[in-house]
Length: 379
Image 1 (cartoon, helix red, strand yellow):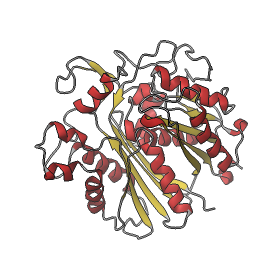
Image 2 (tube, rainbow, N blue to C red):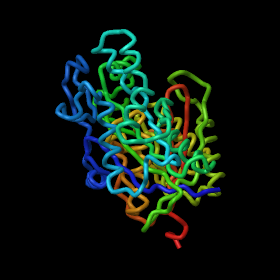
Image 3 (spheres, rainbow, N blue to C red):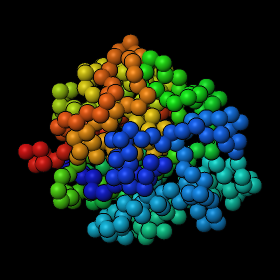
């Protein structure tokens, strides 16, 4: 089986325009989440991580969503020795909502139907950068980013492509925010992942890009070793009551990587700070025998960035491996689940070799990937 490496990446968020800037803020405990009082988004004040209004405004050529993708891809591709016009390179776009906000501002009709379609945005991005292959769209609720990475990994391992450029983004609109408010899933304050007093999510905007390749980068290399997807078949919005289905994805990913529970150094959880998601994740982690492994959620820093969250958090996890640093879970102070897990509340500096990244989403979808340092780097 071909090895798949992370050869370049970018996180583009309210915390910074590069992965390095983002990671520095995370290490220093800086969050992008703050209170907003914007009547265009909500009648009531709310907490979220949003770009300032001067960023990425819609124009005749690109929407805010498309501007975000272009910005992240531009930062990633700058200085990277990869020929994106090569037929062995594929572009994969992940998003939960894409241009859904156009429903609020544009006249209904065929033109809006075309502009709002994710394939239209993907083709526009592909043309902008000169990709020659038909781009692939992954829109799979809040596991979209991880599914896109797994898709890219499998396409490379199958020999269809040598490189996969994976970009994801989502923006927050009244349509999106009101949807989560209708579920009573939005916290009135700062979110508290895995905490006993957690009461809902904060939303967030962001974009991320990662390049996967068979070419091993110089210096320390991070490998995407395996990935797996499962579905609860339980409820359109409520997660599994047992955690068995997420555990199934975790177990499949660990088996494919040839790893045991004692081989996982930390877990990057989905950790949305809703009562049911965090409880389900804790159950799944316990079923996998990983309850003692350090675990974090980044939602207190970024909010929930929907289809970009898996990508953002996977890239941060890769940086954690490189820096031997586990980012704490902002907002967590006391255990709040019947199956306690080892939630990081402080910055941890320790030798790290492997990470499990997990995510779950509406419809009961689950995903898990394993990132490791290259064996040669470990030796």
